[in-house]
Image 1 (cartoon, rainbow, N blue to C red):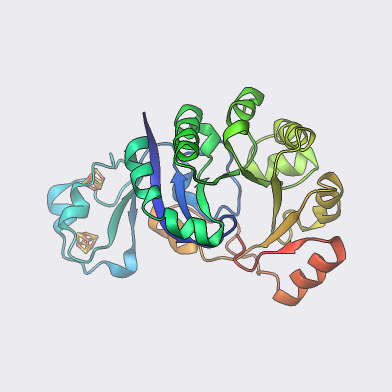
Image 2: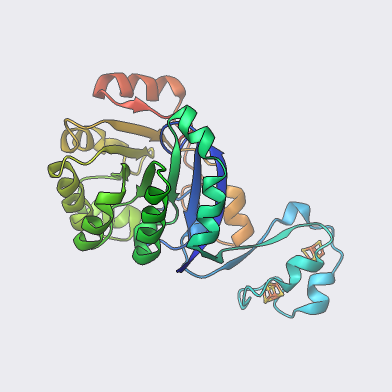
Length: 281
Ligand code: SF4
Ligand code: SF4
């Protein structure tokens, strides 16, 4: 069983409890205007160019007429010749066996820290068979499993992964339907219905709200009310993804947003009974 991923990060500390290995799936059905992993959005591999590293050697142009334009086929040939190491391809095919082999290497760390495997992205549930196969393989190896999800998936997919998922890190980006469409490109009807489904099934869910000034900050009370009885983490906006947008040659819609201060987030976290995530989004 193969899927498309763009990274495997060992020794992750922000994707669930303890020390974890995070597998980043390629492809997401949402287009959040503040997305901090823009290379995760497309389901296909993509070329990234870090212009600050380019030493103008011209080797990419020698081998490819599309070295700097949008007609790139993401073949990766220019990556091999780039003298500045300024190029990479985000996204590759990976097999379940290969990933699990990497994941089990750190089993001793998971056991001592309460960690495990986290599937992230992108949206893991958008590659449902691959996602399910990874979860099952991890459980067979006795490894704790978590999924970071935007919740935009058919109910039957949620039901299928439920028995193999120890923790859902479930993003709620807003409650108002029209605002949600404006901010993410999709309706939140399915997302909220899936969140309710998990709450009713008594799954282990940590809700998370990206907090983006001028985009969804006014919805913090509504999100807290919707998730009542479950832990809710607030993830403040930061702009560190701007380099990735440049590398993908795409505009960053929220580049001009001023990140909220630590004091503001701490105050909100206290006021609304939320967990404060300094790592942010
Ligand atoms: S990845 Fe391939 S198609 Fe794209 S710019 Fe590089 S050599 Fe050209
Ligand atoms: S190969 Fe790399 S360093 Fe050379 S011109 Fe192209 S991007 Fe710049």
